[in-house]
Every structure is written in structure tokens, then in C-alpha cells.
Length: 382
Image (cartoon, rainbow, N blue to C red; front, top):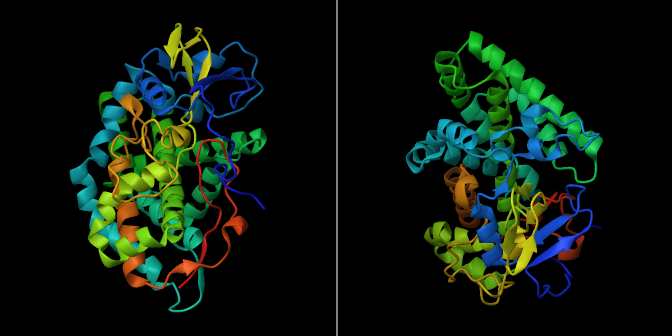
């Protein structure tokens, strides 16, 4: 039986930045848990995300595919700026608005498969297939290949299983390289086709960059949203007053997303950073060359920023939460994630007013990962 890392947690440490021996990177580094310090760290250009540069010459035995180790998320300006600009237009508010009818249709089709009475698994029957279907459709991944994509993506977040992670990185990258080759011969109107044209036309993308962007968009395009939909619905089921508020006024769902993202952040820890020069965070002096891990989930529950942070309060002004990150690396797909979560929650609450948990909280199993926070399953009764 596995519980959420937030269950039965020890009191928050007084120091918002502390030294951690043998952290998630395998190197001694610093963990940031305070909100103000996390926001500073996420926006500080002295904290590099160039993972390859950090690990170069350190004798790592890992076999991660370069498409994973040198992707847009693991890069700094100017390279990061150039790559991000290529994909930003696909996730603007206007672009996502055009996708809403498709998201609505996919959600309706999934919910149509739910029984009128009985038990369903929110994760397997909605939270996972919805964002996977949307991002795969957006990129141009064939329907028959999507189960493989789901499996490889899950393996990439298998904490403590380096061989499994490395193998998944190669499987995913090799698949996307093959798909790119196929679509180059038979182009269409998907986002992947757009990226291919940019590469082939202006030579602004190298082949490795093209593959790495495709892998990143495919994985990031559904992992956090899957976790958020499940965690948000669980939070509502555990707070009947707030659940009833949305049931009676589903139009409030879009405005409730910020508080749900703060309270049930789908990201536990931001991806790897290290200092390129000495940095002071929260009164702690961090030397150059030190790994820094930003605990998004902890920062979003910092009482210095959010009063009674453990309480879900849909009337709270939760703007400024770090659920989508902060700074130049803020989640580029945030508008799409919000649209998917809003549509999913609104439709579930209106179509299944009797929705209730099918198991006790202690029986829920959480994914054993360090970066994301999500349920392996959420059984409910309809």
C-alpha cells in the first residue's frame, strides 16, 4: 500500500533551502521548499538547466537517449529561446480554443463508456486517455501506436529504475524518429509536420533537436494533465463542501483550477537545475556547480504564501501558484492542460452527480516517481 508523499508528512522545516545528501540526481545538492525561494530559483538565469554540460566528464553509467538529455527543457538561452518559439504558437489561447470542440468530443466519448451505476477508474477511463488522445492527435501519432506511447511515457517516470527509464527513452526516441521519417514522406497538417517543415525548409532544427522536441511534447503533453485530473477530482471528493459548490455551479470550474493546481500540484519537483555561479537563496549560500531541486508541491503549500495551505478553498485567490512552473521554462502547454482539465471536471460533475469514492484514502496507490505526483488508479462509484 503506497500513500501520497504528502500523507503523514513531517512538519515543514524552518529552513526553506537545505543541503540534501545524494539527492535525486545522485549528487549532493540543495532542495528548495519555500514559495518565495522556489519562485526565485525558477526564474534565476544563474541556475542552468543544461543537464548535458553538468554531467559531462562525471563518468555517468546512464544510457538515456540524447533526445531526453538534450531537449528544450534541458537547455538554456539562446537555444531554449529558439526551440520554444517554434512550438509556442501551437499552444496559445487561440490555438487551444480551436481544439476545444475536439477535446469535448473525446471527453464525451470516454464518459459515454462509463456505466450508469457501478465502479469506474477515473485514471484509466478518463484522466489518462483524454490528454494522450489529444496530444497524439495534435502531433499526428497514429491511434494504433498510442498504447506504446503510454507505456514508454510511464516508464520514463519510474523512480529508482534507471535501466527501465533508459530503455524507455530509447524506445520513445526511436519511435519518434521513425514517425518523423514517415511523415516527411507523407506530410499532413499536424504539429509534427510543421516542425519538420521548419527543419527541412530553413535548417533551423537539427535532426536531434526535431526528435527531442517531438518526444518532449509527447510526454509533457499528457503526463502532468493525467496526474492533475485524477488528483483534482480526488481533492474534490475529499472536500464535499467544495465539491457541491462546483456541482451546483459548474461554470465556476475554470476559476477553480488555480486553487486545484496549487493544492494538488501534478508536479512534485521541477526538473534538474544547477548553479553556474554562487547563488544565495533564502539566506543559504549555494556554491557554483551545485544541483538545485525545486519542490513545486511544497512551495505551493508554503503557509508564508498561502494561509491554511492544506485546505482546499475554491474561493481562495491562488494566482501565482507554481503548478505550471515560473520564468522562461513555465509550461508551454499550460493553456491546453487547463482546457482539458476544465472540460473533464465539468463534464464529470454534471453527468455523474452521485460520484463518490469506491475505496478508502489509505487504499489509494500513488505513482512511485520523484518528478510528478499522481494516482495509479482512482476507483469511484457512479
